[in-house]
Length: 125
Length: 313
Length: 171
Image (cartoon, rainbow over all chains, first blue to last red; front, top):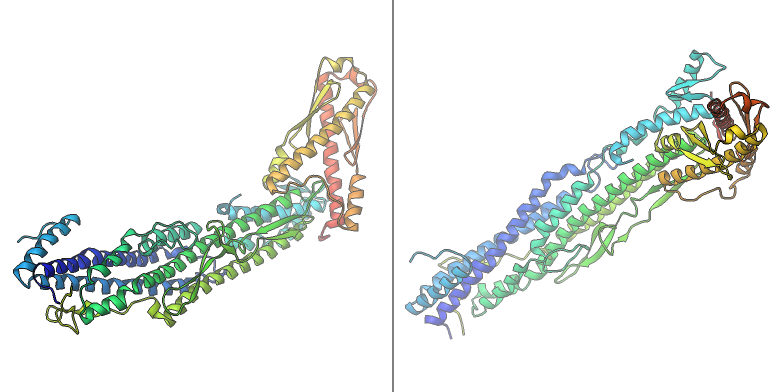
């Protein structure tokens, strides 16, 4: 049967934990990976050589760029999906936590512990 | 000798070829001056000019390798792809023959599965079945694509390191052959071309999840343990008995070297193209569909069909 | 010229007669100097000195060949020493002619004459009366001139032979 009160507060806190400290953390890492990958195109002068040896940038440069762009796209899309999902989980947690007094209290206590564990400053009440 | 001085060496080889050709024909040579007791200075100069003309293009034969792609730059690219990109998606596969730290945070997605366990609204089910459960496989496949890029960079580094070493060997041996040409025992030497043996397949990797594709990650043979080289180093023996024969052997070796570089880079192209075809043909192996949950709003979140519904326990 | 030529040009080798009477040193490709030990020069006669010089010349050229091979291996990475069997008829003929090259050299005053066949068999002829006429330093200079002339003669003949067998024969 559906939860309410303290049990619901615990479930909501789990959603909060999943969204804020799991999914969004990884989303940020994927975002960082995408940014770093995109950043590597700045050094593409390394392909340049005498055009008599396979053309001025060589046979592989075009495909390298294309695959890199594809992977940047995949990582960014993954990041965006995780970011939005993480936000939705946090939003859901706050919605469910507001259901009744019992859920509110249980959620608040667990959230404070989670925030502290993850070095997040306490929310002003 | 080293590759950085190739231009100087090429000029020296041309000059040595001219001098050794003249000396073989009996002209004296001392401190930059060619002489022959039976000729006037003008006559000698004419012979010198004709000889110089015959060897006029020798230094320029090395031009295709005076400017090369940058192996150290590819090393840095490969390193960045490993530490700044692949690392974040690495669950410990250690692909590519390279020791690479796994990202311990990837385990957080397993935690998520437990944390959302009590929820059975459609968005929760969809999130679990279509996103979370596929996530490790898709992440591994994305990691594989990054490793293809990293392998390409490593292989480019290997190709150009070997190309520089090979052109250096050609210059070095040509000069030594010219130097020894009129000695008592001019031996035949062999140019050593190492590009074909410099790169290879680190392995064939099968993508994870559903229909599987085999992709090849390349590597530099000397850097990646277990890499299977595409070819062998090649020795091109040549006669060191006259200047023109030495010069012609140089031209042949340089043509062969250009061919080896292009062939090796085409192997790199193949590996990259295989990655591109895989993404184009089976994109679901490389990206999970956006979870419905991502678009939930406070108005829909409690909905049993669009949201998480009620937690059950 | 390249590293090999530069190193061969500047190599130094020396050899001492088995009885320790004299040491010869070869440097800068065709420069030779002698050092007499135990007052040998003042006690020797012309023929005896000639025989000893021939023996030392032979040892010196062996040392030179060994040092050349060491440098050659170092520069080219080819560590095979000596000559393998000739690969062709032509190569066999070239070697036979090379080993038969007879090179000569004499001092400017003609007192010291050196002859070498294939750089193996050496004969040094000293005009009678020379050791009584020239002091030690004068004799060393004369011997150096003769040796230098022989080495240059040898390499001129070698170039001609190389041209005969392997040259392009172009103007």
